[in-house]
Image (cartoon, rainbow, N blue to C red; front, side, top):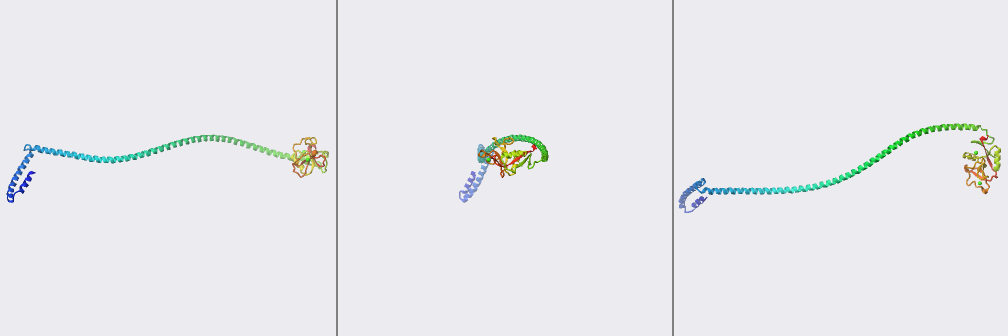
Length: 326
Ligand SMILES: [Ca+2]
Ligand SMILES: [Ca+2]
């Protein structure tokens, strides 16, 4: 305030004594001035002095406006700060979002890759399922065929089993019949032997089968031997079975048999052509074209001991006399 400066200035100027009186006077004057100024000030404040109220009001308004501007400015600053702060947050969030977005994109790509792989596996599984289904169908067809074949085999087996049983029955019956026949044969053979034994055997003859046989002790030509057999009621032997051949061979004696090829082919004395011969190896050889009568050699294989020889040679001889000529 201006009056304070004046007071101070008045106090500090002049000599000390005078200054003391002056000071006292000035103090009083200043006090009066101060009171006057204060009164004036109060009047101004109360609006008793014209013109003074308008100036104060304007200053007040300016202050209010300034304060308002400051407030606005402060608000702007706050907004800017908040906005910047928000922008940082937004930037951070944006970065986070971008990072998350990148991660999500990676996960999405990974998932897409996984889905592709799954689709491939699904297709493979479908293909495998299709193949398995085809194989199953083929196996079912094969199984049906096998089942049909099995049924056919079972049916055949049943028929064969039935036939087998029937055949077994037949075989059993045939076996029984065979045994019966064998029994009858044995009985008939026994009876036959009994009957054969009833035939009187001529002196010096031997019975074998259904014939009597005589083996000469002398030696003579084929023709004489034949004649001597006839004189005894028989003829030179006619060998018409292996058993008879082995029987005659058993005497181990060289002798004539009733076989000759004088008339061409080899014939028995009953006129039958030779069917089965028991010639030695290389016989009959018709040596020198003169061998036309058959003889048996001893000490040879029983079924290979015949030889053709000259009919004029001298040999023992074998006679045969069938039983039914008795
Ligand atoms: Ca005979
Ligand atoms: Ca010969």
